[in-house]
Figure 1 (cartoon, helix red, strand yellow):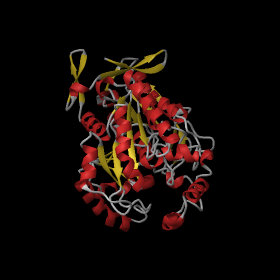
Figure 2: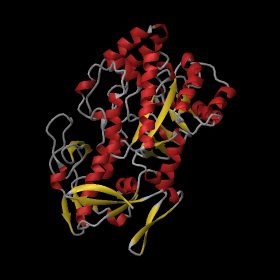
Figure 3: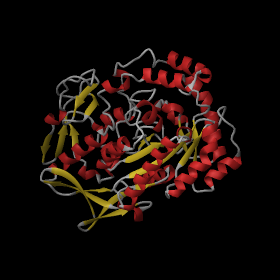
Figure 4: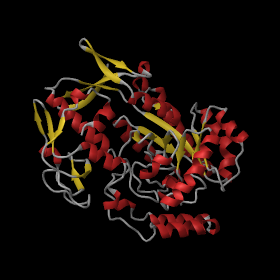
Length: 445
């Protein structure tokens, strides 16, 4: 029951001293683990609730710290995986006449003849209740991080306050990470890609371009190579972006073969679905190394839910790089904001948990001066954070390579110290969790 904890921190298993006390009930539901972490799973003490909106039992009060370890009334592996894989969504009870499969099918059938203004109005109606959603927490949900940190706090207590070693989250000791991605939706967006690369290059930032391989616009090898030759990355964006990739199991498995073939043709290692539709149970059919389709808190996306984490995590063999900030479309046309204040608040919350700040900025939506200036302000802010050593700005493939290497590293004792073993160990740093005045803090060696 400590697998997700050990994988998250890459700490020696001897420090993961959490044990399940009692037999959890068969009922799945919501409870708390501390004041802010809303969990979904089963517990051996108290009762779970079908909704996250009411008074919830606090399982932290059931935790007991003893010399041999920490006893918990729930299985953290179950809870963390229920969040990361959005298994709580089927119990949310949130359904709208505008959010079902039939409504989705009708919308995409009519989309070619609907004006932009009509489409935006329908999208606003569909998302009208987003402010009333308590869970996941808006604008950034960090429940997975909170669960792991609370467990680590208890483990340090069980170690009588001794430092607990682990492998730091990012290479070279960077406090956090950021990635900029561009989903190319239509012909105008495709044609603006060279100018958008010029903008990114002016700020010294490389980004990835997700291209729709069928129907939306024509692609040729020279266009793809023109992106890659400049140091940018190319990934596959859905099949034809019609919103129906996950409409049925049969449809998905018919389409996924073509998607994988386009990935080989593009030389792409990553994938993102159209409109962030997803069914993680089917991801084993993808032949990509990583995916970027799962939102952190999907209040403003057609498919609600969210993975409740600001860190990458594995879905089988695929590494998920979650979308942890609000998309540009939602910022401009739903929230009606043309400053980066909202993005800055999200970045601050992500950085508090050493997380990944991932951005989706569409070439299609920064064609006008006002939205393009907002994007430039974001790049200016990221460059400033990078210059201060506060964030690692990386390509998706670089994050994928690092996270896979880190997952193979381990700490071994060398006298009174700890040493790193595994691939890319020269880029890694040993960190320690300690209690400072009762508060959990991290220290880099």
